[in-house]
Image (cartoon, rainbow, N blue to C red; front, side, top):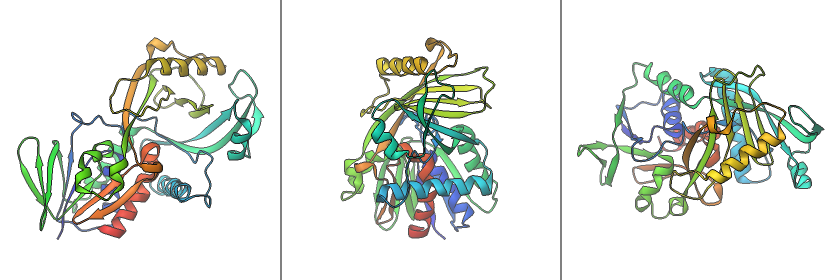
Length: 331
């Protein structure tokens, strides 16, 4: 039987583990390597909203892929009722560039909702995800299957070599050998560009996202997500948590752009007829996402090495679909 290593324990890695178990793929052993000390985890520092965002099939390969991912996730929620996932409404509105916005969201209407002024708003079915609860659920579902030999190693992979097998060395000096390895490290994947010289890894880059998180908020309304002129307000009723953001910076560091974050908070505060908590009560969350060329996610194999990534803003949308593609094509 085959031994498999997975480098990365974020949404891509855990979705793959879950998918392999659900599809009853047989392995002698699956070993997952992960380290939060070296590469800051993006999965749990994400606003984690899954919505079509005005997309529809039949216009572009990327759009088709994103819609297929959303449909896959929707089916997953209906069939499996995973923990940490709540059905909500996504409200998307615009006060600028209305012609372009209405072209993308033709079924919207002028309404007020919880805004101070009437605004053109489109509504979509969406999912609000608690990243910790959901990713823990993915792993627990796999670990509960006794026939599945899963090992988690919290250590940084520093070297990968391939001959007849794949040999992995970790920071603590230990060596490991496998039949195949899957690189599912998100932003961390870029450190393995030399192992995939002809791939999209050559042009992938880290993109920082940041937002405010406010806890113990006493709102009574149901959970929802509002995007207004690109700014986001996300209310999670079960967690009593409010998120306001988010920024997008082409940089590999973790220092958030404070002026931009403050400007987003102020615009949201000026637009909504809701009492927001003071800005200085918010905790700033930062994640580093991997953005591939033309935003297109990648999935390919070179030798015994398999690479999956470039999920960018669509990690929770695409991970299950791409895990199934990987399982059927390469494993």
